[in-house]
Length: 196
DNA sequence: ACACTGATTAACT
DNA sequence: GTTAATCAGTGTG
Image (cartoon, rainbow, N blue to C red):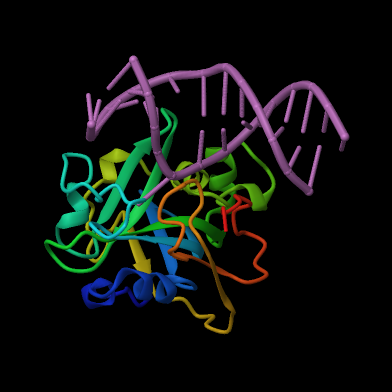
């Protein structure tokens, strides 16, 4: 299994986001491995991006978005859900990619238990769903995805797919940026609706 | 197929 | 005090 190196993440966030499609997210809990293919992501930046948590600068919550690239930014939202992002750009410049959906690969039975759902399509087809399926919460905020044994990214095998884009889901600002990217025709993409 | 709502927390203004 | 990078369930057409 070839892990993604630090240099993978040190670039303009929308570019990294597109390259992240088709790669693997791996969660290890004890001896158990849960993994999936990234099929939907969204890019967020900083001062130039009104939809970003980092738009108004650094705060205790978003500080990972300003640190070393390749780390996990995990936040809690709507009083219910955790979301997983990957830090990009470079130290001191805000950037992160929200992982919005996975095509489950390993550990599907465990994911079903974690989610309380049987249909594979319901396991990780949304940002809050995938963190529940993989048992990701704020204890993993700041985790180094380049080195961690508990949560990391690896090279995917399939590269033959069509990348589609749209505006980002669940935000009403920054609609001019088409920074949501997903694999065309993939069954595991979330069914959230972009405004454009 | 689509719209609306309740759930529940914490960060931010 | 308000809002949020969401989800599941319910009601309507």
